Length: 136
Image (tube, rainbow, N blue to C red; front, side):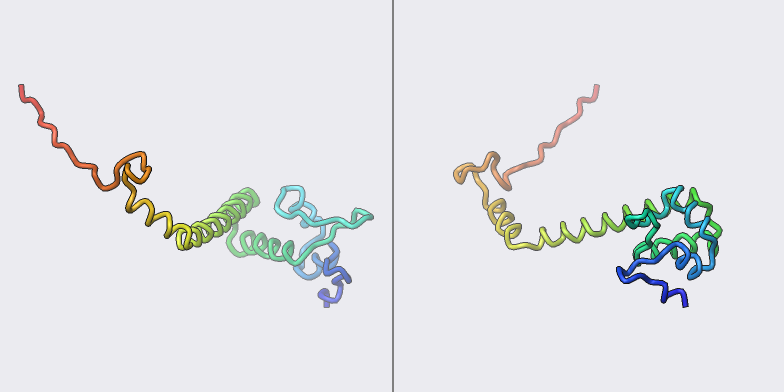
């Protein structure tokens, strides 16, 4: 029923969101003040919630209602969640780079690098030197 309150631009008003999630509109305003939600605004400054905002609200409500997490804990969890998502994305990008043809070409160049071929240090020539302690 509240899903019909979606505007033509795909956004939801505060009253529609409050009805959907069975919470008071003031709760949504508090989440915004705490920095947990950042709904967009219309030209008339009306709060407009996107589908991403609704997903964020679901996370907040799950943490508070079902897991008993306070708002400070919710903030920490959401921040860590975002950092984890970013780290996973960066890791995927790095893995893609490491699997690229350019990286394989670089590995081949390094594998056969010698001073005669312009390398700064000789490849595969490092040796371990055993030092003897003086007993005294």
